[in-house]
Each structure stands twice: as C-alpha cells, then as structure tokens.
Amino acid sequence: MPTPSAGPHRSAGPAQARLPFVVYVLGAGTFLMGTTEFIVAGLLPELAADFGTTEARAGLAITTFAVGMILGAPVLPMLTLRLSRRVLLTSALAVYAAAHVVSAATESFGLLLASRFVAAVATGTFWAVAAVVAARIAGPGRASTALGIVLGGGMLSTVVGVPLGAVAGQAVGWRGPFWALAALAVLAAVVVARQVPADPTGADAPPRPSVRAEVASLRSGRLWLVLLTCAAINAGVMSVYSFVSPLLGGRAGLGVSLVPLALVLFGLGTFVGNLAGGRLGESRPFAVLATAAGVTLVTVALLTVATSTVPAVLLFGLLGLVGLSANPVLVALAVRFGGDGATLPSAMATSMFNAGTAVGTAVTGALLTTSLGDTSPALVGVVAAALVLVPVFLLRRHGRLARAGAAHRRSPAPSASL
View 1 (tube, rainbow, N blue to C red):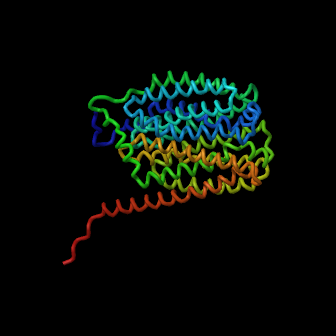
View 2 (cartoon, helix red, strand yellow):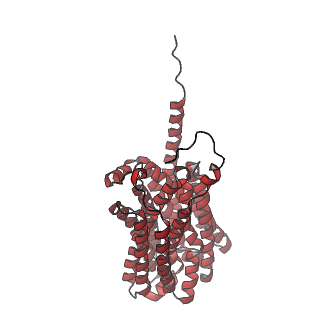
C-alpha cells in the first residue's frame, strides 16, 4: 500500500474530491428500493379499491414493508457476514425482483402483504450493506458525503420514482409500477454484480468480521442515542408523508390528481437536504442534527393548523427539505460509534429508521378512524419531532464534553510552584 508523502501534493485535492463511481451505482440501487418502500403512499386509493378495503387498511402495505426492513437490516447481514458483499448485494436485488413479481400478480391482500415483507427484508439488507461498502470505499474523510449519495438515491426516489409510480398507477393500475420495479431490479442486479469490487484479500484485507465484534459494538451509549434519533425522526416525517392524501386532500383541499406533484416537491426537498446534510455533517454533525430537529418540529406544528392548499403544500415541501436531512449524518455517527463492528451499527440505523416508520404509520392509520381524522398525520409528526430533541440534545452535549476533554488533554500541564 503506498505511503502518503509528508508534504502537500497539488494533485491530491481533485482526486480526494471525486467519489468512486461505485458509490453512485449503490445510490441507484437505493433509488430503486426507496421507490418501492413508499410507492404505496401515492396509490392508496387504487390499492384500496382493487382489494375492496379502506385506505387506512391499505396503508398496512407501508407498515408491513417497514417491519420487514426492521428485521431484514440487522438479521440477514449478521447471518451472512462471511459472504462477499458483492454477492450479498446482488442476491438482495434478485429476491427483491421475485417478491415484486408476486406482488404484481396476486389477487390476495394477505399475499400482497407477505410479498411486501419479503421485498422489505431484501431492501433492508441492501441498504445496510451498501452503506458500509460506500463508507469503506470513500474513506473516513468522505464517508458522510458518500452516505449522502447512497441515502440520497432513496430520497431521489421520492422525487422521481414514487410520483412517477403514482401517475402510472392511476393511469394503468397499481400493478403496472410493480412489474416495472421487478424488471428494473433484475437490471440493477447485473450492474451491481459488475461494478461493486470484490472483497479485498491478502495482506490488504481487513480482519474477518465476527458476530462477537458486531454485537460488542452495541454497548456504546452514544450509538443508542443515535438509533433513538433515527426512529423518532422517521416516525414523524414518514407518518406525514405516507398519509399525504388524507392530510392534504381532506384537510387542505388538494385534488387527488395533484398529490403526485406534492410528492415531487417533497422528494426534491429530501434529495437536496440529504446531499447538503451529508456534506455539512462532515464538519458539524451535531449542529446539523439540532437544526434539522428544530425546524422539523416547527414545520409539522404549522401543518396541524394549515387548511389552505398552497401553504400546506409548501410546508410539506419544507418538511421534505429538513425532515430527513440529518439521516446521512446519523448513519455515519452510527458507524463511528459502533467501533470495530461496522456492519451491525449501520444495519441497526436502517432498522431503526424503519421501526420509526412502522410505529408512526401504524399509529397514524389507527388515529385516522378517530375524531382526530385527517389531522392525525401532522399530530403524530409533532409528537415524534418533539421526542427527537431529547437524544439530539444529549448527543450534542456529549460532543461538547468530548471536545473539551480533548482540548484539556492537549494543553500543557502547569509547572509546579516552588
């Protein structure tokens, strides 16, 4: 392995600024899988009509997917620690494709939920492993930016994939987008198999991962504060996003045909917010967390009282910009605080994001049938956003104490008085 020179090197700057192409390949994979996670949000009326059920019950297709992500993200990567990361990523895409074929062909709502669960397990596995591979390839100094690209693929899906799927589903039926996702997953599997490098071997290979080292990484108190933040953030933001139709349609008067445009606005915000959050988080991670949490709380609070279409849609777009902007920072912090066990902390972050989504959407779906009605998504968002502030405050406080302690250790000891 070449040793860096002691002095500055003029050509190092551009080389260091350029992320490896494979990072963008992994971002394309998360784009595909992010599309399937929330495509149902734009197709609730069509799904409910096809299976003869309510929109609240059709929302179980979102909740079930989140539950599958909770289990798939940490469990499968642990069971396959000795497998090549390239093989695991390719296999996850293949399983994903098969599950979508079943989803598109079934006439049973129960089987649809089962296939969504299987697709989610594959998705959770892909996201967790892709994050670790991207961070490793980019290196410590560029890990947050690389994770911003990988997670940004999922956010970009809310700009293009989910709205396009909603429009296509309204035009040709909800099954059409599911067939398209299955075909694209097969193509993605081929590209990933060709582009993701093989695991390093020989003298340059890192130590073989072990379950013991991975589990030991969960002893970090700071890691659990990060994981709690992951869950609370997604519980609030994705409850609003997943039930955008009743929130903006029933309360703010937005027509059903305009819901995809609102999803595009939200998606543009999440994509830009993720890239900006990942870049800013490299130097000021705790400031990014605190700012995102505070602005999110104000935004969802205003959504609870917004009854006019334009202000409500603009607030929805602002929520997209700030609500998930800290996610790359959280994943990077999870990997950092996890120590030697890099895969499990990343997987647990993915799992906790989806645990928040599952709890938030389940609670919101139940509240929709109560007197709270279409204010439920925003109210759940307020409670979850307020809860985010607690672990964020503790993380920021710990970060300040750690910096103060480091500065004290670097300062010279005072000379003894005679």
